[in-house]
Image (cartoon, helix red, strand yellow):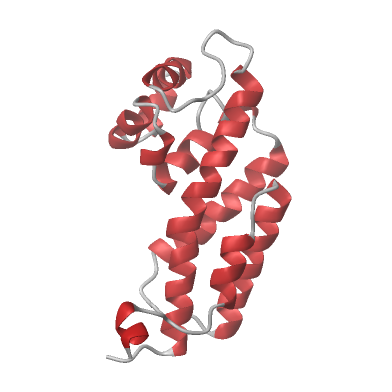
Length: 171
C-alpha cells in the first residue's frame, strides 16, 4: 500500500500530537507545580508517589468527579511519564492544584494544544492537505514558543518530506 502526501501530513500531525505534546506538557505541569508548591512540605515535583498523593489531596470531591477515574488513579501514582495527554490536559487546565490559578495566557495556550489533539483524535478523515498541515504545525509552533517550550522536534517533523521506515532504508 502506498500512502498519499495528505496521509503523510496526517501521520506527521499525529506524531506531533501523540508523541511531542505529552513530553512538553509534562514540562508545563512540573513548572506550574514547582511554582506553586516548591516551598511547601512536599516540595518540587519529582515523580514520586508522595507527589501524587499531594496532588490528589489538593483536589476537591467535585474536581475528582470531573477527572476520569483511570486518569486520576494514574496521576495519583505521581509518575508523570505514565500520564497521557488527556491526564496532562486535565491536571493542567481543570485541577484545583494548578488549573484554578493558571495564568490566562498559559491556559489559552494549553487549551489550544488540547484542541489540536482533539482534532487529531476525533477525525473521520486521515488526510490533511499541505495547507491544513502547515496551519496546524504553525499553530503548535507558535503555542510552544509562547510557553517557552522546545520547538526542535516539532520543526523536524514539520519539515519531514518522506516516511522513512526500516524497509525503505533497506532498499
